[in-house]
Amino acid sequence: MLLKIALKNLLGARLRTFLNVLVTAFSFFLILFMSAMYDGMLQHAKQVTMDTEIAGGAYWHPEYDPLDPMTFEEAHSVPPSAIQALIDGNKAFPVLVSQASIYPGGRIMPTIMKGIPPAQRIVNMPTDALLGHEDIAIPVLIGKGMASESKLEVGDAFTIRWLDTDLTYDADEGTVVHIMDTENFKLDMGHIWIPLNKVQSMLAMEGEATYVTYGKGVQPVQDMGDWIPRDINYLVQDMEAIIEADKPGAQILYLILLAMAAMGIFNAQVLSIFRRGREIGTLMAIGMTRPRVVGLFTLEGGLNAVLSAAVTLIIFGPILWYFGAYGIPLPIDYSEMGLIIAKRLIPVYTIGLVVSTTILVSIIVLIVSYIPSRRIAKMKPTDALRGKVMA
Amino acid sequence: MEKDTVIRIKGLLKQFPIGGQFFTALKNIDLDLNEGEFTGLVGPSGSGKTTLLNIIGGLDSPTEGQVSVLGQALNDTSHAERARLRRKHMGFIFQSYNLLPVYTVFENVELPLILNKVDKNERRSMVEQAVESVGLGDKMDSRPNMLSGGECQRTAIARAIVHQPALVLADEPTANLDAENSHHIMKILSNLNKELSTSFIFATHDEKIMAYLRRIIHLGDGEITKDEIIDNPKAHD
Image 1 (cartoon, rainbow over the protein chains, first blue to last red):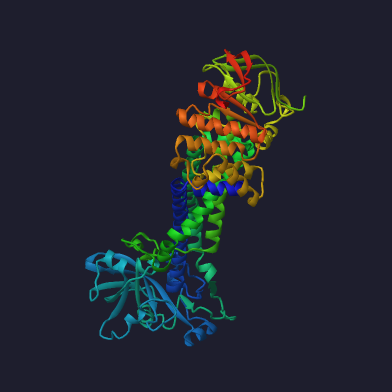
Image 2: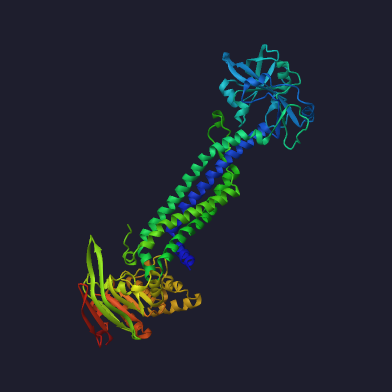
């Protein structure tokens, strides 16, 4: 019975209902969109890291610590035979890492020099740009961020200085052969990429590597000597830690949006109850009990949420779909800030997000509908009939 | 209680707290009203007519005294029981109609039946009968904002009588109406009173209404000053 009356009230109120529902639907849309956008950013960052850097996982030289460049001097050897077999079978590729200094325009810049097989196809890097430069002493691939920082362009030559295996400083001229546009700042900032055989020759570390990255789906090898296997879970743990550390921020954003939705509904409910005092009195006069009137107004608020969900789907659904399919272009490059953020942000709408948002918004709508409606229970029917505003 | 006594009031006192003091709205009210009466509570503004009507309707509680309506002592009943009494056995007509603005005439009249959980088909026929009886058969789908004052009040009457209550309480039902509409409304109510044996109590100071009343209870300063039976109301002639 209450449902029938509540529905009649809502549908009968037309413009008032439409505005209430629209405000709630807009908040609903914002919550979904912002949360999905946030999830999308995080998923994208993880995906980019896996595509361009991690692939299926890696084997590390036991001395290698990517966060401590001082370990690079010792972190190199010929990979164990089982790992080498993966390399030979094109299921993995070796990377030799060393500290170096470059002198673009006469300025010194400490860098990490990495040797990579130009023909590798395991990670999404334009390493084939390093192929076919026999006339160049050291062909170098850098990222856009590095190019911008060092003010280097394709064709520019600069001095590279490094410490070889005998702890002897050596130097030669490198030439930028390609500037890659990567979203993974870890491949870009402070890095120079050189053909592996060239780096091995420069460092006098023939056949050696610091780590070996293997492709997705490659089965782990059993006999890896003292090299350490690093699976995807290990390699993305930094990213996950960043995501985890960012969660409170996301939750605050989520709460702010929810609060906005709740305030809109609360405001609409309070206004509705204040304005409908005479109606409340009339309902009481014709025999509706106070708890039922409270229930009616709460139910109206709840139905608001249901209608809002439907309106969100109908009006904002295509917008959500469009952004989900085509993303939103970003005006600036965040990689210079050390962030892996796509050039186009693509929101990710998970079932969990939609269901949890729907449930949460519905519960909040019910609560904020109920709180002002409780005042009805304290109203005297005679006051309500006079349209007397409650204190 | 006698079979035909609809309302019995003994020693009623009603006071309202105002600024730490008490304002006495009604005092020393003793009153019996019988089934089928067409009674008016008459008096100037502030004489306590509406307060008495509200107490009879269970919308307000007496400070002292006994009020029994349709065999039920209101002093001993809960809010819910009083709501049930109103829902089943009473109808209300207000000065400003109090129609729900988002409902059509049909829906406004239907509301008491929905609250009484009357079956849908039965509801439709009862609503149509009530609306026809007040001459608004062609306005079923109109909303209150599309109706004149007289039509609104006739809708309110239909709503008050649709569930065939034993008692209808009308608070200044013609105050917002012109003379022609007032007479029209009173004729409708008078006919319903005869047809349905429903008891009507009016709170009014409208001379036009008084012409139809068969009993007039005069109130002054919260007390009954005169209780007169009109054997041959003028308007019935």
